[in-house]
Length: 631
Image 1 (cartoon, rainbow, N blue to C red):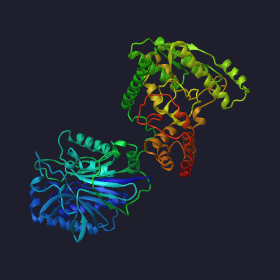
Image 2 (image 1 turned 60 degrees about the vertical axis):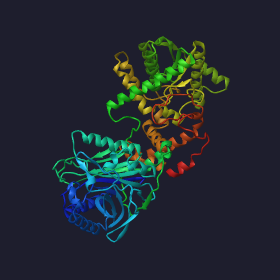
Image 3 (image 1 turned 135 degrees about the horizontal axis):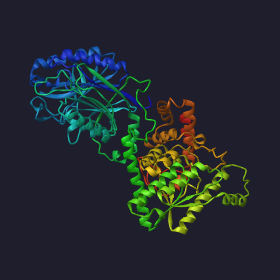
Image 4 (image 1 turned 90 degrees about the vertical axis):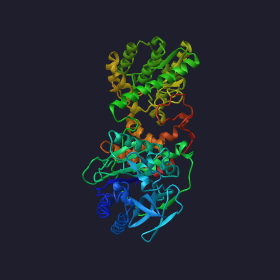
């Protein structure tokens, strides 16, 4: 479903050197995984014998018992389509390999040997096992099956899933095998492990899994030996982790006295297309691999995963504060470079009392503070017109006074009326002409003021407006430096809110945040804003969500809508989401010509629409294929 697959990490209750008991537990957990529509489940290292059997691996009786247990397990899982990855000690060419069996419907699909054999401190596997990096045979005869064997095996369903397997120490190596698996297309990695517990080790282990998922641009599923393993010298807590592209999706409970199974729905389609957007991935060197074709995998009917409705906003207040400070620093230093390079000593900003101009003014003041420049050299121009309300104008004036910048007020009413007369437009016809004339008059004033004062015009338009083309071409679309161009509307509120800690502007900021978003270009009624942007183009929460998934990994409209329904189901129905998604798509395509001529501005997050950096698109590309896909 839209590239989502359910995967699982299982930690079975282990009885050391009792393969029959372990196989029984593995069978039950595999059945449970199948009931939950899990595509693939991974178990700990040397699952059937127990990892701590140690020198008993050199004893024929244990290996014979293990083989009998596996044959029984295969028989009992003939009707189970969930793939299980099970730890197994394989005797091949008079050598013993620590391996992973990949099984499905009672058949062994492949066997992957461990590459890096630890032989230090509490681990001394080289007493029993050899590395599988240099195996000669590409297959082995096991239980009457000719089974592919080697570290070069991948498994793919021909759609969005390709997975590889590594074992415990492989992940801790300088060059983990998963690096090569990922460069050959594996977007899902499984690890069978036996990692003992030491003080703080679980934190490092999670960091290792999480960062490897990021480095490989993959999902990573990890299962480690649990309670039941020998505690002669070490204790095993049964750590289970599932991560995706640098984020931990779920963690199991360590030290459980019972078998545990954790599941997560991973978006493998997203990972594939993220890789296409990352040039460093395509530059990675490939090695020769064999891919085993998968079929008959369980399908999920409903995704059991939280979809973040605000992908641009950090999840915790602490992260929001940290992110906001970093954004302000990026904006400030971008502006400092532009002003020092051009030897322009003053900044010119059109201030309206709205979100965007407020942030531009605050960040400009930050730049001036860093350089010890005078706030008086920031010229804030408020330009009331037909739709300006007392609330926004008052907030603009109070903020400028509190910050100590130079404030100028220029009423644009008469200038706009002269423009109407010049082009023979009826002033009572409140069309797009009526609105755009005002926007261009304001921009003309700012540009001319910049010439007069020797200043740089600071653009206030944000990333969301740029995506939608919600600006007047050569009006508010234009500036000499687009300070907010990398920040989406949903995030701007949080960045502004970070300034509330300054007592002299705290109340002003609070009221700005609570003011409806409006261009204020149409006449107001009794001082109340009549033109609200989100009633015209749609909620910015939705548009920012659409923008993220559309740009980040090229998601199809049907998938974007599905994810939006999961994220916003308590606020918007399918019909409403579809309506605004169509608006987003049409506006995004038809307004590219504005982005092609957009001013310079600092990139802030991973998504930018600068035609010189992140986003190159024909100004006349057609949207029909996207609208049809949504239908």
